Every structure is written in structure tokens, then in C-alpha cells.
Image 1 (cartoon, helix red, strand yellow):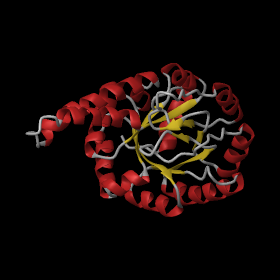
Image 2: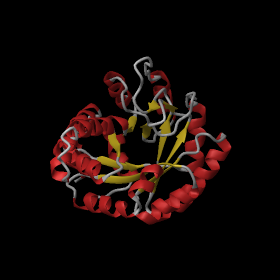
Image 3: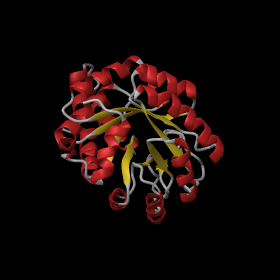
Image 4: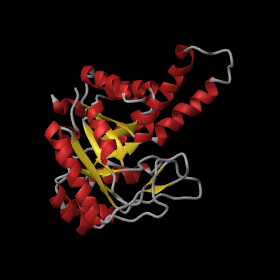
Length: 287
């Protein structure tokens, strides 16, 4: 069941759960995410970053759409962290049902201006729009782009921004970073700030950098209004750690000899995230 983000998150917002947005960059990761979601009967967001799209190529989106259409669960195909109008237009042409414009590094006025432009391009063709206020941190070169210093989202700006742009969902900065946290870095969410933001606007909120945060904080964030959580590093780390183990046997070369245990390893993580976000069984709400 292929939906856009607005349709997908309207139910999550009403029922107070979060939909996992799993970043994928190969058909093996797509296979694992789709299997895990169907096994848990959870709605799911297939997220593809522009860097990932440059690797898998636009034709990959057609395969993802085919998987979504035939799936027994609701699926959204989302461009993660689009940085320009050109990237957004390419995503719309490719068949994404949702796009993100990340102008969080700009001033509030500039962010409003470009987000309005993206809404004007996307909404007429039934593509939903996510934007971001504040900055997400980064944990290293293998993580998605982020700021060296987290700038927390200003609740006053949220209300102004949502009313001025008409975006369908908003990513907020409350203390997360992209990637796997090093041992000497302790992630901590500003749940008090999230509570204040959620009280200002009636819109699904998004948490980026959801990998490696303490489960209890993530669960509380869902209760306080987060309806989409991005997961990239956690599933990829599980998949590729298992790949390294499997490939110790240097005689293996066929996909069915190498990848099934790697997919199983990432599915363990995906299952856990689905449970943590209270998304298990929620596919039934969309029938």
C-alpha cells in the first residue's frame, strides 16, 4: 500500500505512535526492511538520502515503489535531507511520495521561503513535504551530514514556520546526532523542549538521528508527540558487521550464500525499533 507522508503520519499522529523511517542504500536493505515491517505489520517509511540515491540510481525507486504497492502494510517512499530544489524535483520525477527540504542551516526567513517553494511544487502532485528547524549533530564522517554544534529548535519559530509554510511534517532538533555515538559521548534528549513544541502546533513531528539513543528516551519522545523516527546507522551497522563475519569464508560469492544472515541481523534491529515506536500491528489502522 503506497502512501505519501501526510497520509501515513495522520494515523500515527491520531493514534500516538511513531513510524520508523529506515534509510536504505541497497536492495538487500530494502528486502530486510520490507520483511521486518510485514512480519510486524507495521507501517514503514523507506528513506533514501541524496547520497544514497546517487549510488542506487533513480531506477531503484521504481523497485521500491513496486515493493510498496504489493506490500500488506502502508509504505511511504521519502527523500531524506534534500538540499536543493533540483534534488527535490529529481525525487518527484523518480516517484518518491514524500520529500524533505533541509534548509535548517538558513535563517528562519530563508527556510520559510524555500519550504514554501517546495510545497508549491510537491503538493499539487500529491507529494508531501517535511522541513527542519534547528540543527542535528553529527558523530563522524560515516554519518549523514550534521552540524558540529546542535542548535535546539525554538518553539516560537515552530509556530511561525508551520503557519507560514503549510509543511506536512516537521523535524525538530532536541539533542540527537546522526550516526553511532562514540563511547565517550552520551546522547540526551531535551524532552522538556519537545513537550513545549508539541503544545504549540498540531502537526506530526520528526526525530532525526534516532540511532543509538537510549530506548527509554525514545519511547518517551513518542508519547510526547514524535510520529516519525529516522533510523539509518543502527540497521546498517548490524548488516555490515554480519557481512564482515560471513565473508571470513572467502569461498562464498553467491548472494544467497552471503546476504540472508546479514539481512536477518538487521531485521533484529528493525523489529526492536518497530516495537519501541509502538508501531507493531498498526498497519490494521489503515485498512
